[in-house]
Length: 457
Ligand code: F0G
View (cartoon, rainbow, N blue to C red):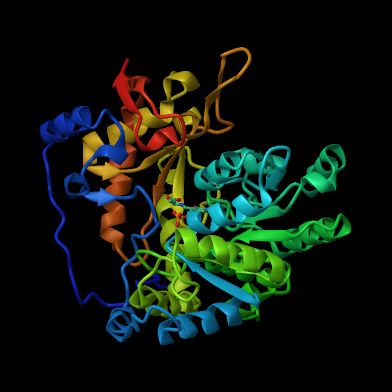
């Protein structure tokens, strides 16, 4: 088979800045060893996130000029609504400025003390919005989803047996909705099978609980279904995505991932009463229902992106480029979450640096070293992000996995950028015994990974 190439040519370029190791050591120190506090211009290859970092197409940029900036009833909204509705089938498409704004509205309405939200795995902002409402966020991934070494096709799946037990234990009246995150970001970017979505829907229906998708990476998930699940090989990505959404009663969506835009999102709903209430909150916090926190041009770009992301040449390249990255690391013996997911490679810090205990943040240590060695920015997804102190015993409770995510922005980097990253990761791995842990010197009450400061031990 021939090399799978980037299915685009480059029309606009943006230079990246080279720094020396000495400069980066100083930058790291000034940033409190937290990659979120490093200036982007001091980063050579930025793999902090695939969110809002996509390169837009010429057609999306053209759409920016076409944007209708009317306060009410803008043409751009109706184009966006039509495309999002055709894809998802939801009666109400409520635009918001990004995914977490949809989460905030949704959980303000259905959350609250005494309520429980089960999810295959909540991402950080979803969990934070559930908890901020007073409700409890519960992760119920299948057991192999938590084992980075298990090679299986749909490791993002919900544990449907655990879900049934959970509903019986807490009572269906205390579970306002069940959520499935596609792909499972905090669980390694692993996809969820159609079969699993169907089964979860069957369970949800049995207890009269609505099912919602956290649909940020729906197209990447649909591509995995096409490639790996029986019966989908001859269906289009759009048909597969439509089927995924057909089992849901609503969705939260961050357009910053699979809508290939820098800003945008929506809340999809079928329930008339809920949609009415959501729009009331929207008007107060985001904007009028036909723009909801976005400019008309953002809606144009998102509409166009939702069509482009369904292109199989694009998805073939996208998924292959992540797989290529993973393959090379595995060949060099670097421990990663296998198989590679849709949008990122996750280094398994527990096996990468077994000499650093969880409370000394092994992932953070790798993140800092990757920046120091190569100017590469990545992010810890482990005990910095999800570890906590037990409320009663004050004892440290580690995250279930210690990962370092190298997220690949869409259509931004070429294969040689990735080859460079591979070389740097392998270098860090070879010198891993030199790595030391970190301690936190200051942290905010919520989502501490964004602003905490660290010191090396
Ligand atoms: N849900 C998932 C699964 C996500 O990955 C994100 C964002 C959100 C919801 C929130 O969307 O950023 O538009 O408000 N994830 C980014 C990341 C930030 O780096 O993975 P948002």
